[in-house]
Image (cartoon, rainbow, N blue to C red):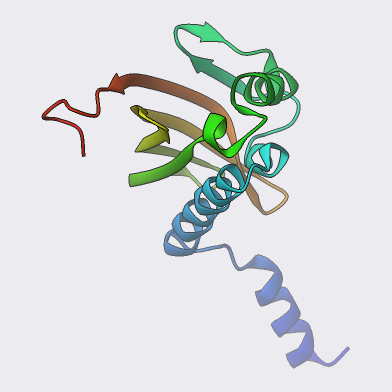
Length: 152
């Protein structure tokens, strides 16, 4: 191999993603998860989580890993678009903690007919094999009355 080609190959193999591209990859993952949920693709939604051992906390309880979380979504939100609702993530803030670790804090809104839930997600992402996956997910949620002043 010619020295220039070898140098270029070495340089390409040692280039790490920039903080900007890592943030973009994480936000793209969240966007894909939102789209998957809204089309009723719970497995597609779960593609953003580490399988099998994601830690998922919601309502003061732990889910049973990746499969338990998927089962929860299918059981409690599956069956119809009305039951699933429309999900929207917003105000996403990504803090890169290390080359392979990031924390995302953001808000979400889930509209299921007249029932509207809003909340905060705190997510720890880890980068493995070039892919950012959620390894810890904590949800804090509350119901919003459609007539309450704070409803959006």
